[in-house]
Amino acid sequence: MSVMVVRKKVTRKWEKLPGRNTFCCDGRVMMARQKGIFYLTLFLILGTCTLFFAFECRYLAVQLSPAIPVFAAMLFLFSMATLLRTSFSDPGVIPRALPDEAAFIEMEIEATNGAVPQGQRPPPRIKNFQINNQIVKLKYCYTCKIFRPPRASHCSICDNCVERFDHHCPWVGNCVGKRNYRYFYLFILSLSLLTIYVFAFNIVYVALKSLKIGFLETLKETPGTVLEVLICFFTLWSVVGLTGFHTFLVALNQTTNEDIKGSWTGKNRVQNPYSHGNIVKNCCEVLCGPLPPSVLDRRGILPLEESGSRPPSTQETTSSLLPQSPAPTEHLSSTDMPEDTSIPEEMPPPEPPEPPQEATDAEK
Image (cartoon, one colour):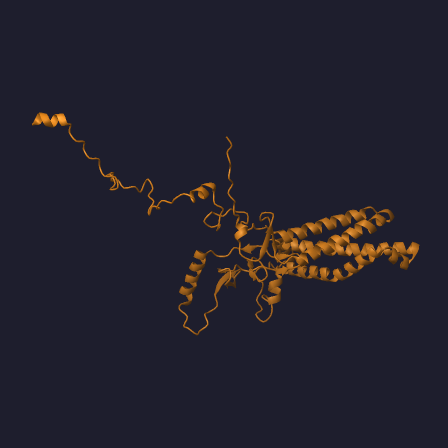
């Protein structure tokens, strides 16, 4: 006798998460929907390094040192690992408020601000929070229905509030926030070193070949080297400049979003409450501090009543073909059952049996 086992489809939380993110590998990979420039980044890095390993590295390993391709491979692997870690991880997305939580926050705001007359603009929804003896304003997000934590901001591209929001980087295809900023910084730093390394040894390769066959003949024989030099030359300025800018921000314990808005500079002359006043301490906190876990729980299982439509089971499918009995109006547990054990009205008590005919004749 064969037994058929029916497996119910499990609905993960990432399938119902709001926002403009895409998920792969059953929620393990999280990215923005706009991934075209990220694919361009992969193509430029993989293409340039493939040409370098295929042509220049073999010649330089024989002529100069076999350590040249080894060090280049280490830089390449480290750059790719940090790029994928930045692109595929949760940057620190803050979950949106549930309907009950949003209604409670609205009640709190109305109780604080009072009734606003018609025609007047309501006061801004701001809470004051003290950090290191300095007042920091917590702003209300009308999309996520929450008061954002300090340094958090709403990304208009991903449509999510991100903790310690730095910026949205299309080159990595993801937001850069509290949970992936260190990997982003290590990526641009290693990419700068890799670009300088490939560019410098391409120049060395052209110089060595030119001593033997001439400069013009070298360019004709190695068009791939010319392409690598052009890519590295135009990439070098932007990547190295970006690395220097973020090194400055890390030393001050500041984000790109705060720097653009002038949160700790300008007319207010407000000091950065998150800075330790020491470059080493700021770098250790940003790059070496504990990494907080993701609060999304992307791979968690939703209950059936929250997962929306669910596939019917075999029992539900067969019962839908049978006539339905009226549903009871109230369900009582064993502890809620009344103590009265009288027979229900639907079942009247049985009538007593009639006496036998012989007994009635004897009485007469």
